[in-house]
Length: 253
Image 1 (cartoon, rainbow, N blue to C red):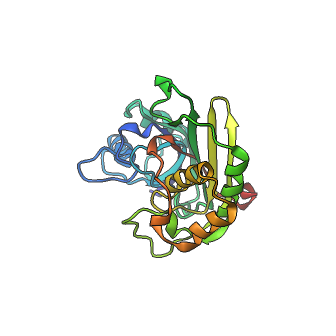
Image 2 (cartoon, rainbow, N blue to C red):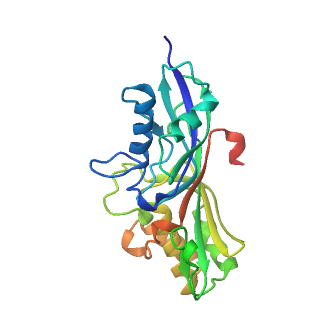
Image 3 (cartoon, rainbow, N blue to C red):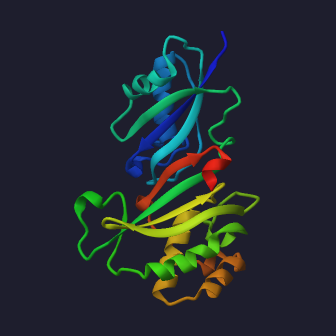
């Protein structure tokens, strides 16, 4: 019997997860999902995600795929089947059958992340796990001048964490912008891929550079130094969301 390839759209609150990827003796999103699939199939089933989000990072639009030999469950119904075994902090939003060659990670053209910054002297308790609270309101025009430096195909060594195992640290950033939505200052970045903790390092550095009056050319020099010690403090994981994964060139522009 031919296996079907099922693509899932997944959302999760990363607060109590040690990230996406399976780790020994750790609670991970991948591990929880594979546990649910194992109960449905009566055997181990592996699932592949588009983005390996770190501990504490959330997702509104993670994408993953798995192969199944079950024909009695329609692709769109797999969300309900899987969700029946999932905890409240991770849910499958939708499912669809895709071509056998589709791979959630390798087929992706780009990932879109948003980082939520809450500007307030007193933080509201219900926001505490989902944003980075700061007291001072930054100059959004200056932030966007700095953020625009990141657009293009560049070496992002400066903004990766110690221990990153990537042999190639060149990434193609398609957009990098700050905007205001309600109570939040949001940073959105779209790229073909990201280095370990790259976005959080970028956010922390941009905020520090804006506060200290660093000019656009000086920020570019920080990027071009390829020296992690030149970057600012890494922003906390709780403000970062994997918003969506892009699979067609048309969606990039």
